[in-house]
Amino acid sequence: MGDINDYLVNKIFTVPYIDKLIESKIAPDSFIRCVKRYEKKNDITYGKAISEIYHYLDKNYRNEYFFKNTIFNKLLLDKHNLYSTSALTELPIGESKVDLVMINGKGIAYEIKTDLDNFNRLPTQISDYYKLFCYVNIVVGAKNYKRAKEFLMDAPVGIYVLYDNGNLLCRKRAVYYNEGLSYDAIFNVLRKKEFESIILKHYGRLPNVNSFKYYRECLAWIKKINIKTFQKEAMDVLKKRTLLVINEVEKKFEDVVPYELSFYTYFTKKNRINYNKISEFWNKRMEV
Image 1 (spheres, one colour):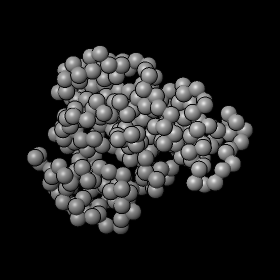
Image 2 (spheres, helix red, strand yellow):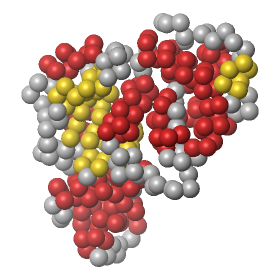
Image 3 (cartoon, one colour):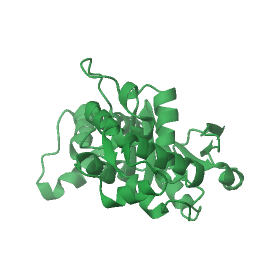
Image 4 (cartoon, one colour):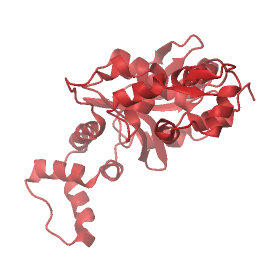
């Protein structure tokens, strides 16, 4: 246990909690308790408080949010184009949920294993991800790199390492692998309008059956499409779920959103494109 209650920090750095924090007129007691552990001033901004807690994560407790936010900033914002690449999180596939997905032409799955995690479920997770994606990476801290390298020596899985200095480096490149693709798994990830768009593209019509048989018939039609074609088209429709559209009236995401809240801002449903609201919250003063 560090200087700050780690359970509380985990609670604070979640999308639902930050949603409530932004909407609240007065900071919740749980947030104030956390802030008081390191901040002695009575009058600070929410941004200053969150930055201090995030700094604690960086130095003492790199949890899942810290990893996700780092990957988002260093790969999606720094190396890709935010307006041509989309991201998804906690996407359910089989018995697993992939931590982060980036789609730009091809879909790439990222499974996070912090220094707080074990590798017990990794074989199942990797197997599940290959049912939908042809590229899979795991992201580990420096402490787990050797173990990950040995564990994945003969696998097509790539390895990224998040070092103590904040650098995120690819130490093993993911190799294209499509032998695990599954019609059922891909179909089950798609929403009704998404798989219908693929069916219409290939057949020009939808199955004319009752609602009880509809999904089963749609899947039967899908299974007549080449699976590599189906997987690629699934990536195209999944990409549209979260792809940001440039609005010339508003400021760009990367110019306004604080680094610490990049992951939150992209995945919140309440404030996703309301950058001004997030900026106002960041600069709002709070009493501790």
